[in-house]
Length: 142
Image: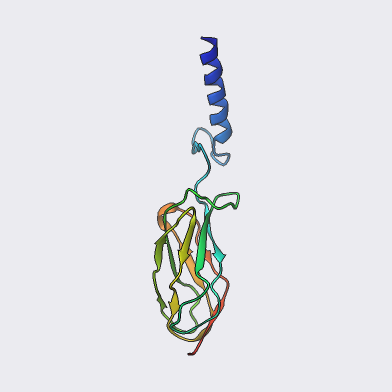
């Protein structure tokens, strides 16, 4: 009987240590084996490109946990859209992809019109993760 009590005590201690420290009172999330995606970040920023040609290298968006580490368990859908759009362009390619090991890769993105200071916005609404905005990039005429 004593051994069972020790296992139960250890389980309670481990559960208490993994309890979300931001929770108030009796509410919170018990997390075993890691945390969920807290925010998105561009791990590969969009580069300058030519209008209607694929942006290379592929733009990548990582799902990060509260500590800023890639959440390798995240497999949710990530969507990119144009943020700043002074050139009046349209974003083409596959705009929603499922993340693999916490990273969504967009290998066929294009912008239709030349312009300066474009940005992309990445979102994953179903996850609750905070959106990310890319660094500005330019699109030139062909």
